[in-house]
Each structure stands twice: as C-alpha cells, then as structure tokens.
Image (cartoon, rainbow, N blue to C red; front, side, top):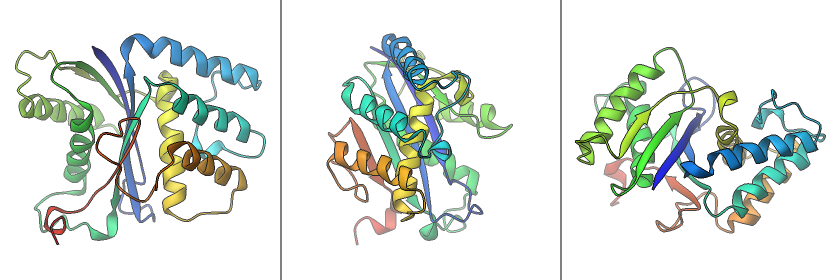
Length: 234
C-alpha cells in the first residue's frame, strides 16, 4: 500500500524557551488523502471559515473551540488516520558529548520518528513542513539515509521526501493541532480555556497517559518519550 506522511515539529530550537520539543507525523493511505482534505475544507465551511485560513494551534479561541474539537474527533474516528510523535526533554541533551550539532540531532530524531511508520512492504511519500531555506537539502540527506537503513535500493519504499507549506495540505494542519495540544499539556499551560478543552478532548479519546511512551502496537496515536541511549538501561 502507498502512504502519505505529513510531518511537523514544535519548539525544536534550543532558544525558544520551551523545555520540550516535538517531532511528529500524521499519515494515511494515499488514496484517502483527498477524502480527508475535502472533509477539513467542508468542516471549515460549516463554521464559516475561509479555506484560505489554516488550522493552527495558536489560533484556538472561544469562537473556534468547537471547530478544533471536531477536528480532534474526526482524527480519532477515522481508522486510517494515524499519528506518531517523539517528545524530547531538551534539558537532557548533550550535543557536544555525541559530536553533533542541534541541526544534526533534529534530523536524527526525524529519522527515529519515521522508522516506526515505515514498513518495507509498503511505499511512502513523505511531506515535512518547511522549516527553513535549507529544509530541502537536509531532507534529501535524510531520505538517502532512510533508504540505506532499510535497504531500499530500488527506491520502491521511500518514493519521495518533499518539504511543503502547511497551507498546501489540510492533513498537515491536523498534525499542527495534535502537536500543539501535546506541547500545551507538557508545558502545564492553563491561560487559554479553549485550548485546555481541546487538550482534554485528546486525553479522553486517546485514553492513556500523555506523558508516557505508548505501547508499541498503539499505531493510532503513538507517543515516544525520548531518552539518551546511556539512560535507557539505568
């Protein structure tokens, strides 16, 4: 089966003041993509919101709360829509110890996030949200690394890695909302009541602890709380 994978991140820079960073993806069979995008457009129309306006976590307020709760319910009610996220506590990072830059680590985590999703018997089109002007170059490097690790010598598993803007794919906007909810939860924020209601909806439908690694077979909403290798067996 061929899948589309839509990736995004939050708070990935060391200087943004947040303790946690998140790298995640929403993915689905390619043949379901149009159906999902059409539904998100339809949902916006029901709330009299222009399709030119993106669904963004930072746009949630009292007026849009119900829309975002509907988006969360839509995600959890569609079996073919899945989510995977890696949560990293930036205070435990030591790039110097592992002879890596912040950017190197970012792309290593991207690989760890994707390797859980990818199965050799399927094929994948991967669409990361554009991070900066170097996004395309680094994502092509990651694509080569992914192909090497899974012996994708004929380029049949990883078909392409193409950075895109979030307005190009409503599915990518779902990813922004899910990661935003987790970020809000991990930072213990409570200043926006509407955002808290969306977080509560995620907690209710996930029906598991958001601050712990999910069971490996929970592919619907999979959380991996990252730890350095030298901490795993303590």
